[in-house]
Image 1 (tube, rainbow, N blue to C red):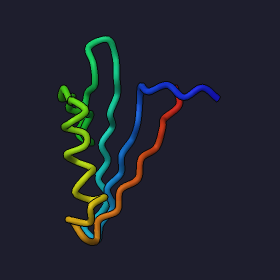
Image 2 (image 1 turned 90 degrees about the vertical axis):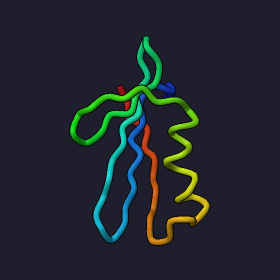
Image 3 (image 1 turned 180 degrees about the vertical axis):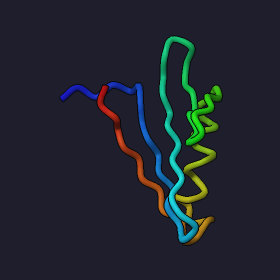
Length: 71
């Protein structure tokens, strides 16, 4: 299996529901694709700003998972 760093889905789960962020990389760089289908340019720092508070347990009750989406 060859993993390419091109497309991932990050899921945040809490009692309020599930929220998905898709991070894709193309010729223009990384983009965040929201559940509404909006594309926003995203840097690695912006991606970490979404994930790190959950991993540091700053937001208790929220779980984060990341999945590689095969092309």
